[in-house]
Image 1: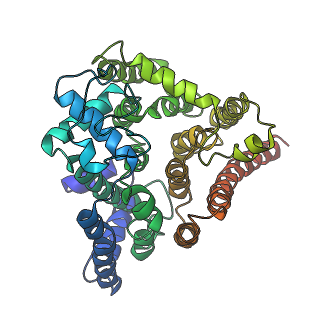
Image 2: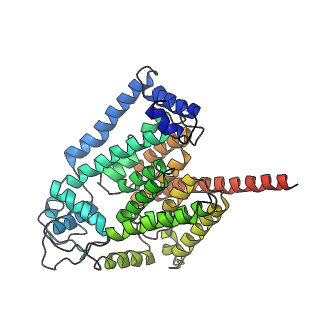
Image 3: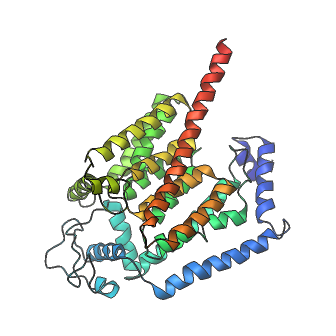
Length: 420
């Protein structure tokens, strides 16, 4: 047996291995069919419509100025969580002379960063690479890597019977040509591609507990959401999987060590960043689902936290019972952490939609998502944008929740039948 087959035969049969290889050759070899040529045309269109215009225009959003502001400060030896009052950025005025976050040229109204220290180090490194577009080029590279990881995940997935279900053309309508990713994430140059990258990465690593734990630790160190995912992953390992407690403790220790080491720089100054993040959970802003309640004057400040806790308990219950699949255990915490955020923006809401689409992985859902994206972009500057985005997100979330509940009912019915 060749080394390639030996690797995959470790966890699956020779037949499964052969099916995986056939999936790859059927979708991505020259001899497959004419869809390959269509795929090349779509890739060319994606590069032209997305990457080239953005590179030429380079119209970043206000948040990009914040990333550059703190990256430049770190490159000058300053503490991003304690910026001197007389500090003036030389780069930010090149992006925005005067805007909402920068009433005075060279000064951002934020006195300290509200991001984890590891992310600050990454941004400062990219700033040194290129003072203006280093971070932008990195986001585009991460986008390309996310596409590659998605292809690997779909074609080397040995645990699903629908390995080849997502057609390459549909796949590119999901990623490269969906207007949401080009006009909501990349046109304003947001950092939300981090979430997309880690969402696909943890799916790819889900059968390798050590690598998955390391990926979750990095996700937590960079964007925070790896922590709640790790909690549910531990529940999944202990209860439905029955993994030995010693191994679970070792994985938790690995996660803790990586997360702790990532927070050594600028300790304890970064505590203010997390305090500010917690404070933001107490007021309603942007496009949160609680905005109508706030306008009616019936919003309760504790409602977002209460709904989040209830949703987490719902997921924990079905995780312990074994009704939730591993993919759902890994991705739904991302969704639940976002949708009940009282200061939610559209770019964050689409992170939740992205994760829900990864759970669906159906041709029909992905195609519908493309047209939903077109509809949202067409009404983006109108009051209808809020309704379109939330109707899309909630329909996907309800569908995912219903699958778990129905799966649990089928499991109960089977047990009852066996008992009788």
